[in-house]
Length: 459
Image 1: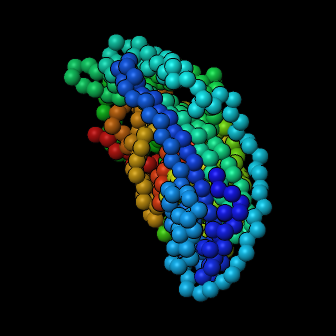
Image 2: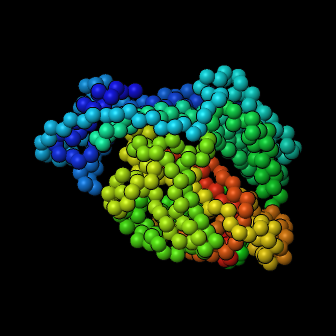
């Protein structure tokens, strides 16, 4: 990583035309991926990404430039280009950087980058073999084991100089079930901010069986009826609806420019009083956790909605300047090529007052969304459309036949009001969240919840 002396020089150059703040970000990321398809190792990749990004502020104007050439001469040219673009004045600013070391809340015991490929292959094969052997109708299984070793440095004109290292591991299994010319799929893809010790508690065989079981369930399912109905959404990845339909609307990226349904609503009742929603980047070894954000601020636990009242946004440095509110440790980016912005970490609806069995028992007729899939959302309006990966009809308080082809359609602001029961089995699911600063790992989560009415797409 670049020295403090060079970082001081780069920041001084970036400030030399009149900027009021400058920052240097360096990244060194090694990624490994192993893929098995139909029992055979299909691909092994090992990649290294390194480079530096330099940013300057003048009020709420920002200029960002990056380079993969980390020689002193190239970095000075990069800093000079930022200075030229941000202002046309003259300033002689000397910067002194002081190293800051953040505590590591995510210890790694078995670093994936030092493990043999054979060991990783055995872990992945355990999962794919379990999926293939689950049922004779499983026709195809693929699996990927990914690990990322991400080292960053942040230095800025406020005197900060800090390095951070995070290691993440994820296994993804996909299974296809076939019968009578029809194919249906299932998947499971847990991840942690951990090393390979993750698989001591998250068993590879269970990952494979989960994917295969879902595929078999969908193969035997009928099509879901359409219409407005009561829906129970299960824990874990069910939290993707809050993440997409509401979470993005609470990021300063959209709030700060008035392009959010939640802009100007701090202190207002925006959800049912049973709803408390949190973004917490400090959870030990969670997939979306960080020791510090990509602007060098410590990660923290932010209560976004407390008992239905909007309490906080997720705020980066630019958002802080726009909104006049403090930063919340939510600045993130995919890599050095991206300018950072406010992003989620581990975002979830907290446990509520209702018993899970009472939630299902309260539904006379509706849908039980056991597992959610992907979807789309408009952050300005909060309008969303999400697929249900595995669902069941509920009749007279009992979970009945499996259905497929269901989707949930609504708006973030409305679903927050219509969540009228919140259970007590909080769990999270893992995903990659895309936004203007690239793709970053995030956890989504919730306990079992009941939405009193929502439009269900189907047949």
